[in-house]
Image (cartoon, rainbow, N blue to C red; front, side, top):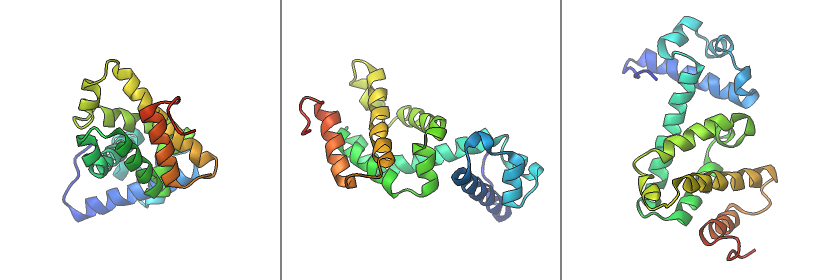
Length: 184
């Protein structure tokens, strides 16, 4: 990932590239997006793209970092309190309120690599370190994170059969208290 310039032309070009990429994400799978197509959509040439990004993966990594930063800002109080139910609630509301592009990048099975990278980045931040410090088996903490997202994805795939608040309450109860204690 390269440093962003303060030059207005550079910022506009990067914004155009990101916008074009987001349009393409809504239309096709990542493996079907080419830099040539992206450059055409952004109304730039390929060389201009390469002035700002070394590859499509470099662009994706920058977007992943932006999502991680946005999410950490959104959920910071709950993380600081090690409030698992609060984190679940904030995470679900974050996903429910984000735009179609971000929701696709984080929830669509064709973009699971994107979600996995964002999850790894989040769990490696100092904000999430306390969750691991208290865990006997840290790999289980990661599995919980994946499970939380799987629940949300299932809710989406089933055309949101409950309200978001019902989903939050049920998933939080299930994750925090376990299957045997959840109000099934």
